[in-house]
Length: 194
Image (cartoon, rainbow, N blue to C red; front, side, top):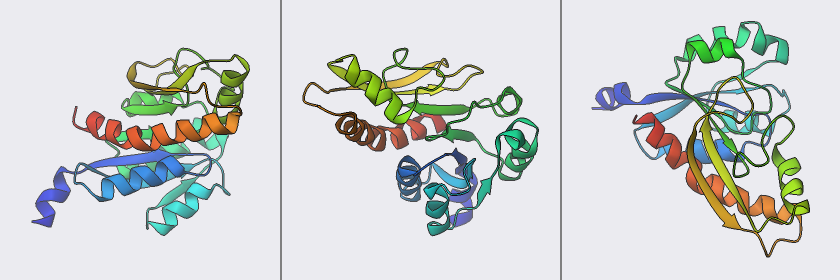
């Protein structure tokens, strides 16, 4: 019976640069269902906490630098894992076209309602601080396909949240993390089924 279920499971590879709280939620979600499994975590930061999370879940990890990302090493490593879907979960480098050509099913989560607050340098607290400074009444998350430009791929899902009660960028970040953790794994599951 296990063999039959396992052959239908889709392989997910996560790319992350930091803490990995989204990666943790994704791993837990897919351990509870048979739609997919996280087969590897790739990170460009050798000290990223996400690598510790990978180890705690017995998931192989691959650490690389920017040159290796752009010059073929990462692509070679990806071939070993045969991903059906690549998920960028707090990954801060631009994803290379060479990988997108071979693995076009790549999605990303952005901590704002794109097209607002997107583009190079707009990630994490930079986004939340800009949202706060512009006195926005709401913000949210955008899950989108990745293309050759920062934050310009086709939208898959958006969810907004009221932030009129937030006085700091940290308070906004907390609300965004709640949305990410609630919706990102479910959206990944729906993309896997397409």
